[in-house]
Image (cartoon, rainbow, N blue to C red):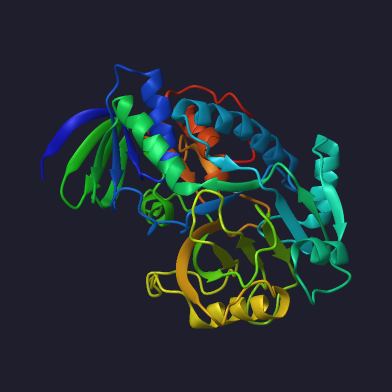
Length: 391
């Protein structure tokens, strides 16, 4: 196995964070050689969550993460200007349910307190008003929630295409279907080994989604991450309630079989297929070497989602036509942590030449985390406080 051209920076993973990091680093270091390695094809959805949209929200229960979303919002607006394309559709973020239940999204009650402290406007809603306004039915009358009007949905394909185009224009090179088997940092840089080639770089960013944990474990960096395969169901509406209904997330107490959390995207504003997408947020049966992802929705989880729609969403037609798929979610096992993003300095031999971005529902932070990764690759202190992300 021969060593290919030496690179200044190699980025493992052409997902949103990898693409954003490549673009930010390349445009700031125009004389540097930057390579992105991707195991799958361009814009694959096999290594992360699937679908055309992601939830965009400013609100977080944790203030240190909340502050970062406000900074991310500024960078999204800049990215939209650079790409000359609307990427976030601000149709609103609706949370409802048991206000005291803690989930991987946070807690309703604490998030309202955080919004008050951060002076982010929102509309507090009783459950009956949520049912009247948005068409839900049969939910616990003690539930409550809020609508944060600046939330909404992110155009996934538009974002990835824009970042790929911007990175390519900045001189970034890409190699697809390159499965990285090992990263070997040392005192002078790092070697990256794939099934086909051997690469050498001064700095390496590991942003490979579900595969990152295995690569890092070889270096005795054991991040507390679990990967779950979650069900997503697309279905048509039996009636149209209104244009641009909000994204919603239902906070409910766990049941014996699962965490009992559901979320939904209305028909998105940039396509004409007219499908709602209903998802399960069930942290059950984590993926292991003995339990590989099937890339097919768990039938029991699909039925749980369809039953939620039958009982609480009369404006949908779950039994008339629906399609199911699965998505992989890589989440920290510590409920107090949202993400991992840091230099590996001090964590392994040569760790100062390695940057890691792993875990969490991170798409909403794409431009921010991309810039933070670029700062760390350039051995520059990030321009924002990332103490909540470091490991």
